[in-house]
Image (cartoon, rainbow, N blue to C red; front, top):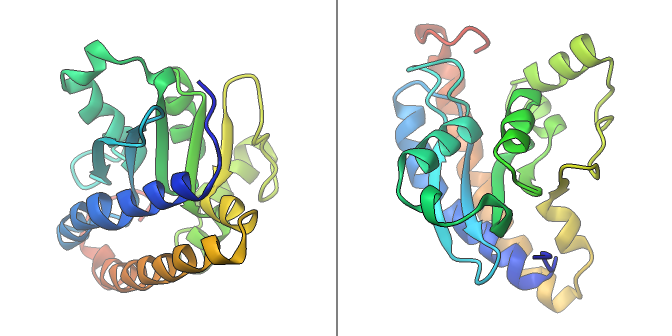
Length: 200
């Protein structure tokens, strides 16, 4: 099933971040985890299936996306609905491990709010870009966003293609989300020396 990249999709993705992911991430950051999270939505009606957040203080592999998949596969929906019928939403552009997890789980898409450059510049978490450069020799944006497995897109790429009347409320919502993440990032950075995350 194709995903129509329109205002309704952008609104559903932003709503999932603001309503479902952020409350989980606020609790996660209070426990020392990073600000990353994600959600799964149905392609058919854009309804939420599950949301999760980063749990690296429990296991350094429990990035927001991987922990989301862990939670999904531990629940009943994974036995009833195929991932090809779902939208994968990540608050931040997935790292190479999370891209691989998305691929192995059979998703044909992912959408993200913050870019790798945002993670580096606004969140002081440069590891995604460092790993892509050091391990794979890729510059920022150098991986193939369209490939045989999936199509990866930023939410702002969708918004940029909308009419101004459709884009304006989405941009206002995006700014609210950015402000909440900025506060969470400050909390995380202030406390990260006390946690046990290898790449903090």
